[in-house]
Length: 240
Image 1 (cartoon, rainbow, N blue to C red):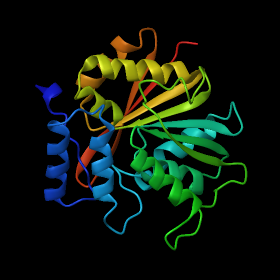
Image 2: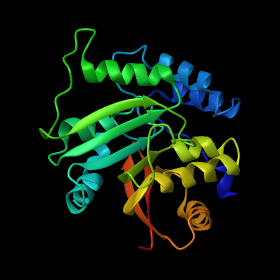
Image 3: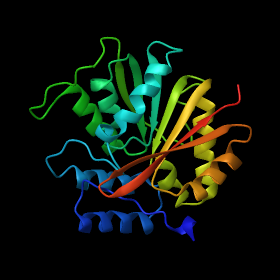
């Protein structure tokens, strides 16, 4: 069954490392921050400052930048990355997007958040990150993406990004996945867009999103292949 083919592909790691990470996820609770602390600590052992599930900003920019250019209802545009980990998505948007963006990355792991704050502010012989637009901002906060009450008010973001977070949370059961989806829509503005990036087949993901967001429009765009793997961007927009 397609629903069982929920494999996490990590193109930047060797095949053996990918199997080890997938095995850790399969045998652990995704809601336990200690799992993610360990994974992020392990991946930081190399020389690359960021680590990406699926793909990074380099691969996503051709898809994201036109959307950001069109979505200029707010200036700067507020972007939330749920379960950001140590991905290059937030930092890439901040440093390379020519349009003003106010990006917030949230993650359950304090290890991941501390690393990204250090990367943003500079340290370990690295210079602080510079914004691609003078009005752009970037922040990182430790928070559970299924409960963002303490960090995000309702309707406060025009764009919410989820790169693999639904995939990870759904491993712990559908209630958690739908709670994540509900929280993403709570913080999304009425004219905003939720984008989920995944390798999961549309015949599995689209019915789940339609069930979890009744009355909303779900669209799919194929991305890649990157590293020989085809991915999908699932865009969910309200009916306003």
